[in-house]
Length: 130
Image (cartoon, rainbow, N blue to C red; front, side, top):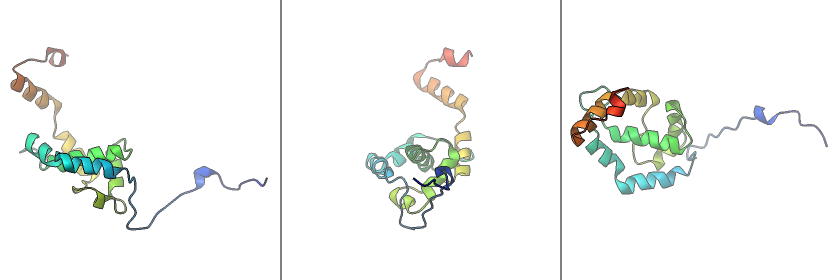
């Protein structure tokens, strides 16, 4: 048997078809998010008004969810949702990784804990006491 002159790790596969959808499994997740009305629900319940990156939280959360469903492990992997025709499968505008970072910084965990405490009338001492 002849030896292969190239290692498998040297092969690069590229696609230039504009109608190609990377991670076609996103269709199921995207369908569920639309039927459940998640973007509208998130926009109605997450109030980050007055904070940089706080507008339209629904599309930002869904971009993060879809990126994770596509195998993303960090914010920069959200760019995979912008390749080929993947954006046409999703019912929301795919946000850029830099926008997602700004959004996540607007979430400030201390304010979320304070809001939860006010809503429930309790003090989560195990969190606040260190």
